[in-house]
Each structure stands twice: as C-alpha cells, then as structure tokens.
Image (cartoon, rainbow, N blue to C red; front, side):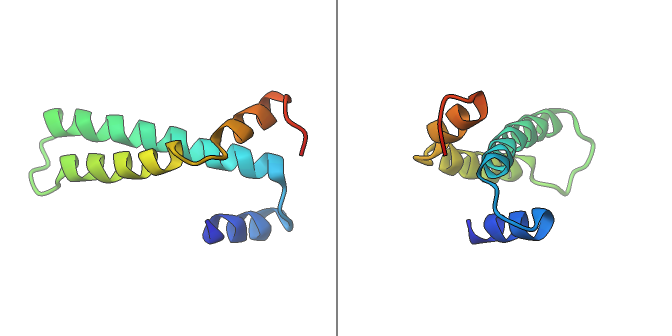
Length: 85
C-alpha cells in the first residue's frame, strides 16, 4: 500500500484520490488478465521450465486480497461519480 501511495506521489507529484482509485482498480483488472494468460499458457505453451500454475496461483492470491479490500466499493463509486471525497 505504501509503495502505491509513493508511486502516485512520485508520478503525479501529489496524492489524488480519483487517480489512486483508478490505479487500484487497474491492478485488479491486470491480475485477472495475467491469471487468464497463465491458464492459457499452462495448456498451450511449449516452454517447459516455467510453472504457469504457480504464476496463476500468485496472481489469484493477490486478486483475492484486492477483492476483499473494504475500499473497493468506495473506489468504484468514486469513479462512477456517486461518492464525494
């Protein structure tokens, strides 16, 4: 969490709640995408020395952590414009 805040401050020069919410939701979407990629690669890749199922598991574990974040609804509502900050 601290690294995310530091990254936002470094990149934007300040903490912006709307951009932070978008950043966190993009992280969720990317973990979904990488998880699906890992499953497809596990079935189709000719690379033998990479554990795609382990990669899938690590992405799903992080996704569960993000999904259970109590701020998830707040971030979604903020970006929809139904939450004041």
